[in-house]
Length: 80
Image (cartoon, rainbow, N blue to C red):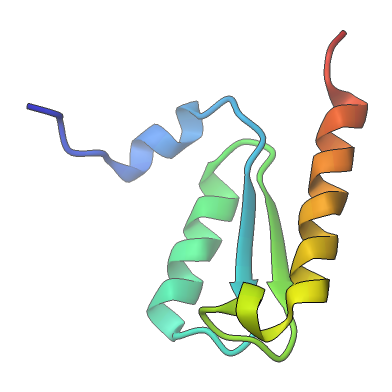
């Protein structure tokens, strides 16, 4: 059996993490995104304007730009 995850475990993550949310998201999902962004070390949160839960569908260019910016930033800071 797999143990249930806990919020406390978020602080142990050691991978680059991008939290993406639309500015029209449901309040409970927005609160979860805030929790992830604050508890995961060095997480980056991006809010996509004029989008909800499907921000990648509603604003694909903005979403893709945020994703590429994140990938480039991770690559620049990667230990070689």
